[in-house]
Length: 334
Image (cartoon, rainbow, N blue to C red):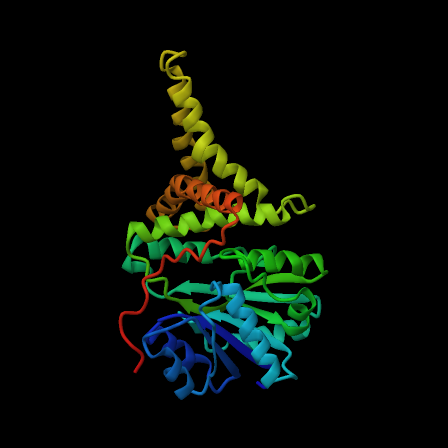
């Protein structure tokens, strides 16, 4: 497995990081990039045999920056590496995934990256974890983008210059956009790739994650919205229409229309029903499909906050730090 390297990023993941390292150490060269952990992650990673890169935290941290640093270190210590598995430190790699992904990229030289099924470790722990598990189940076959947990061809990563380090969210979508522009294809495999531990148990975490999503839509559209791909333009428009346009119009016209304009709020249950019916094709459980559809519709409001956050920061020339939603590991690494 000297052809494969693993780059993982994390901060205070506790036992989750240990579990991840145990799933990959000995199967490939592993580089762990730490962002100021105080729970013993760094010595634990070294003790388990990982190469550790500690980021300078005086520079704003982003997942993209961490992945680039890990990839650069991997190339230094393993210059002949052909494939790299990017992972978050709260994941555990499936037993046969690295071998399966290698076989697929060997067989299909047009593939720049591939991902498999990412499963949530405790989907039953909260409705928010369940929503993540549904979100991870993206369509099979050729896709436009895979998440931050992906298996990529080193040649392809080098060709596009890695991840955009200034992006605080959806850096994986932007990375995949540049891969496709360079002529590479991206694929979702039927095989299990990893188990993820979102540890999302509170509504406040869901809200922050949705705010981050809205910020990413605005940022992505600002970077590539005028390109032929119209990157994140439709997503941004949906947030503006459903998060602001419809309620603002209904409220503004309520007096001159004697309240008739308030009927516009009836569009929301219609949109909820439409989203639910579309989900039923891949989410057999009715309650889960309804919860996810509700999250999609209600989520436009916090996403609007994310849009505003981006444009305010842009107008003031400010760099926004990452918007964290996860509960970090409460236990220290053994």
